[in-house]
Image 1 (cartoon, rainbow, N blue to C red):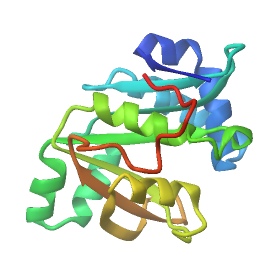
Image 2 (cartoon, rainbow, N blue to C red):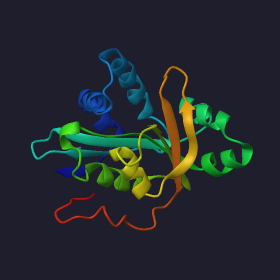
Image 3 (cartoon, rainbow, N blue to C red):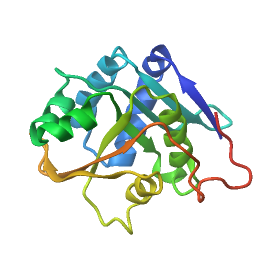
Image 4 (cartoon, helix red, strand yellow):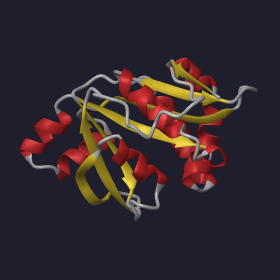
Length: 193
């Protein structure tokens, strides 16, 4: 496996693969994936866009992650902003990098790919804080939750409902930059950016 930084054009060239990984990882219906395709295509032009991809030795996409500077007028930013009080808005959203997507194909999960992708993405991030949303789940059983907690993400909002999605989400955040590598992340044979 090889972890590489992606430019906007790299993401657009591999958009079919990105949407496929996203769909497999999230278990979403095909009609929702077409909508996400349009969103992802628009996201690559946002300020501070950063992306990483994990490629197999034969060039297949095993995982990806991306984010950008969060700002007023962006749907996710405005939804989260409306649920925070003014001090929290200033702290969390004043200079925030938003992790928009971080996914690994289910067949490739459990090998540290998500951790390497998150570390690389956050090391490239602009801002003093980082926020992300993840579906509410059992924190001990969910790989995503265990990953975010290992990286020092704490609760900003819990049981948050985004318009158009009946599932509850947690909004998690942490300060940037990353100070040190999580002790459980490094393993012999891992490859980083």
